[in-house]
Amino acid sequence: MGIPRSDLPDWVCLVRYESNFKTTATNTNKNKTKDWGIFQINDRWWCKPDDGRQSHNGCNINCSSLLKDDITAAVNCAKRVKKEQGFKAWYGWKSHCQTTKISVNECF
Image: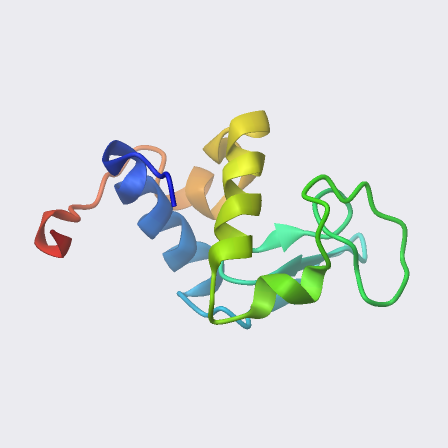
């Protein structure tokens, strides 16, 4: 999926604190936008909500596609978010992962 090994600790930590590794996770924010899937990708900017609300749809994807167990589409969109905004786009990463790096060595 084209994720550098050096970034894996950040990605694993991010999904732990954003969705607790749940591909079907959703969250409605105070501003009425919604975050979708394992990476909690926001529908105002990155995906098209099913209810027809306005979106920039930066990943050119329907938000419901981010809720699948096959996370290929979610990974591709999350990589785009990271490329444009860095990991700081995610509050979970900023709050829990920015200064603490977890080990993923046992995964290899």
